[in-house]
Amino acid sequence: MQKQVILITGTPCVGKTTTSKLLTEKLSAEYINLTEYVKVNNLTLGEDKQRQTTIVNEKALTEKLAETIVQLEKENIVVDGHFAASVTPADLVDYVFVLRRNPKELKQLMLKSGFSESKIYENLAAEILDTCLVEALQTQKNVCEIDVTGKNVENVVKEIVDALDNPKKCVSGFVDWLGLLENEGLTDEYLKI
Ligand SMILES: Nc1ncnc2c1ncn2[C@@H]1O[C@H](COP(=O)(O)OP(=O)(O)OP(=O)(O)O)[C@@H](O)[C@H]1O
Ligand SMILES: [Mg+2]
Image 1 (cartoon, helix red, strand yellow):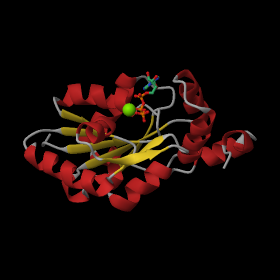
Image 2 (cartoon, protein in one colour; image 1 turned 90 degrees about the vertical axis):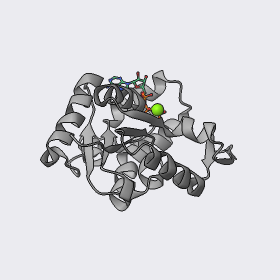
Image 3 (tube, rainbow, N blue to C red; image 1 turned 180 degrees about the vertical axis):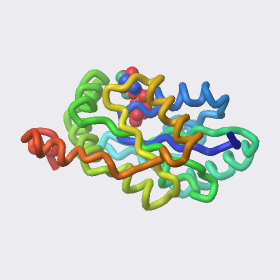
C-alpha cells in the first residue's frame, strides 16, 4: 500500500477518535486530531456561546494543515475531525471515510458522554440529514461511508483497511436514517429542527 492521507469524519460522538487511533496504529501512521491541532496551533476565532462551540479560523487551519501534510509526505497520515473534509485541501487527500451510526445508537452514546440536550438534537439532525457526507462529497474524491452501528472498533478498522486495499469497497449513498426513522414512526422524536 502506498503512503496515504486518510480523513476520518462524521457527526460528533460517532466514534472518529476511537477508530482513528486504532487505524493509526495499524497503518503506522501519523495522527492529527483537528480539535487538538486547532488548540495547539491557536487557530480559533473565539467561542460561539449559544452553540457551545469554538469558532475555528478555517482559512488559517487549511493553510497550516497543508504545510504539516506536505512536511510529512513520506508518512501515512490519519486526520480525525468532523470538519476534516472541508478544511483539508482535496489535492492532498487520498481517501475520506465518513463514519455513520444509527441515530438511536448515536443518541445513547451522546447521553453516556454527557452531551447537553441541545447538542444531542443538533448532532442527531446532522447525522440524519447526512451533513458530513454531503460536505465530503462536495469537497473531496474517494468518499467512503462506513456504517459503524453495532460494530466494535476492530471491525470498523478492518472495513476501512479492506476499502483501502480494494477501492471497489469504497462506496457511499447506502445509509438512509430518515427512511429508517420514518418506517419506525420515530422521525419527530429524533429530528427536532
Ligand atoms: N465502535 C464502537 N463501539 C462502541 N462504542 C464506541 C465505538 N467507537 C466509539 N465508541 C464510544 O463512543 C463515544 C464517542 O467516541 P469517540 O470519542 O471516538 O467519538 P468522536 O467521533 O471522536 O467524537 P467527537 O466528535 O466528540 O470527537 C466514546 O464513549 C467511545 O468509547
Ligand atoms: Mg474525537
